[in-house]
Length: 488
Image 1 (cartoon, rainbow, N blue to C red):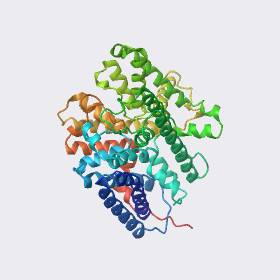
Image 2 (cartoon, rainbow, N blue to C red):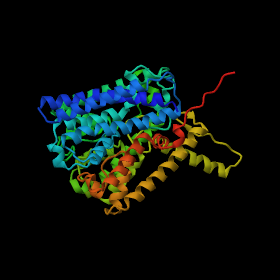
Image 3 (cartoon, rainbow, N blue to C red):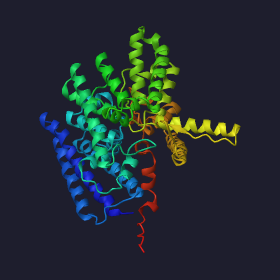
Image 4 (tube, rainbow, N blue to C red):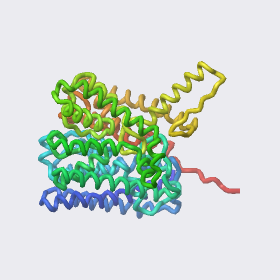
C-alpha cells in the first residue's frame, strides 16, 4: 500500500471540498443567514487539514494500483461526508452529528433519504439547502472524477480510481487519456444540468429552486426545498424533471457517441433499449392500476411516469404518496428500486447491464445443460463478454445479496415492521431515498435509532461505491506495504 499517495490525494480532496462550499456560503451571505459562520469554520478546517495532509504526505512515488484506488475512493467518501456534515451541526440546523452525517452521506451518495420533516426542510436556510442539494451534484459523477478533471493527473494508473468510483460492471476510457475522459464526462454533465436549469426557468421556477432541483436531478439524488417534494409544482415542471431523471439514468457513453456523431452506434445500445423498455412497461402497468384514483387518463400517466422515472433512476423525488397506491403499483416500484438505471450513469441500483448479463449467463448455462458439447458465448452490446467480467457480475450479485441480508437483519431489531424495514434497506442500499410505509414519500428516517442510522449510512456508501471499496478499506491486508520487486 502506497499510504502517502492515499493521504496526499485525500488532502487535495478536502481542499476541493472547501472550495465547493464557497457556493452555498455565498447564498448564506446574500440572504444574511447565520450559517455563514458555520461554512466559514468548516472551510477553514477543511483547507487546513487538507493542506496539512498534502504537505506531510507528499509522495516521491506517485504510482498506485487497484488496491490504492479502492482505498482512496472509500476513505475519501467517508471523509467528505464527515466534513460535509459540519455546517449542519455548527449552525444548529441538525445539531445531532449522526443525523447530520446521515443527511450528508445521503447527499453525496445521491440517495435522498432524509431525517428531516417537511417543516424542517422549509425552515432551513437557503445556503444550507443549497449545500444539501449540491452534494448530490458533486457525488453524482464522482468527486474523484472531478479531481482528475481539474487537477494534474497523479498517475497513469488513475483508471483504478475511476473503476472504483464509477457505477457499473465495465468501466473504460472514452478517449486514450483518462484526464480527457474525466473532462468530457463533466462537460456533458454540466451541459445537461444547465439545460435543465434553463427549462425550469422557462416554466416559472426561480433561479435558486431551478439550481437546487437540477442538482438533485443530475445527481439522481432527490433533495428538494418543499415539504411535498415536487407535488406542488406545475405539470410542466414535473414533466421536465421526470424526463431529465430518465436522461441522467442513461449511460454517459451514449451521449459521448452522439457528441462525436456516432448516432447509429449510440442507438444500437442493448442496455439503453432495455432501460427504456422497462420504463414503458412499468408506466403502462401502473397507469392502468391507478387510473381509478385520478379519474383522468393523462393525470394517471403523468403521476405514473414521474414515479417510475424517479425510482428507476434512483432519484427519489415524488409528486404523490405512492404508499396509498394499490399493491401492484407499489410492488412494481419496489422492484424498480433494485433494478436501477444504466451503468455509467449517475443512478444507483444493481444496474440494467448486470441484470442483462445475469439472464444471458443463465440462458447460456441452461443451453449448455441441454447440449453439453455446445458452447455459446455471452454477447452484450454486440461484443463477446469475457469470462472474467461474467464472474465479476456473479460475485457482485452474491455480495449484494449477502450485504442486503445482513443490513436487513440488523434493522429487524427496530420496531417498525417488515415493510418499513425492508424498503428502508432497499431504498438506502440502492440509493433511492424514499421507501414504503413509515419511510415513504411523506415520511423520513428520523424514526430510526442512532445505530440504525449509521448502519443505513454505511448501506448508502456500499450502494454508491458498489461494495468493493468499503470492504477493501476495512481489510487489514489492504494496508500492508507493497513489496518492491527488484529488477535483475
